[in-house]
Length: 76
Image 1 (cartoon, one colour):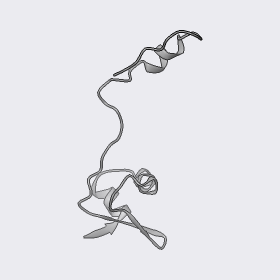
Image 2 (cartoon, rainbow, N blue to C red; image 1 turned 30 degrees about the vertical axis):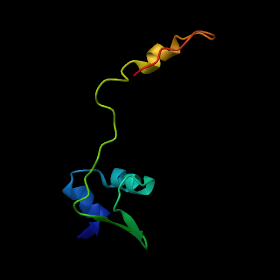
Image 3 (spheres, one colour; image 1 turned 60 degrees about the vertical axis):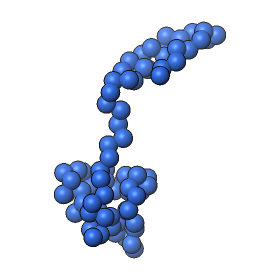
Image 4 (cartoon, one colour; image 1 turned 120 degrees about the horizontal axis):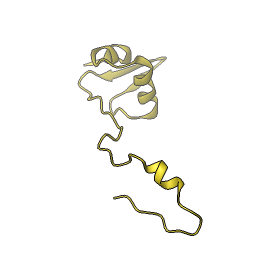
């Protein structure tokens, strides 16, 4: 069943503005805009795309010390 994006955000405990931004970016498979309102399938999972495994901790700090002409360390 399709519900409004506002109702979807409330049900999932998410911010309405952030949910709308994800819909505009195309991060939801079932989100569609009808007129001025967004609708989405109520069973659509809310996937968080942030990296949480610590792989990139200190990446910017490490990268800022690389001098011109030196080889950059590759992160796997």
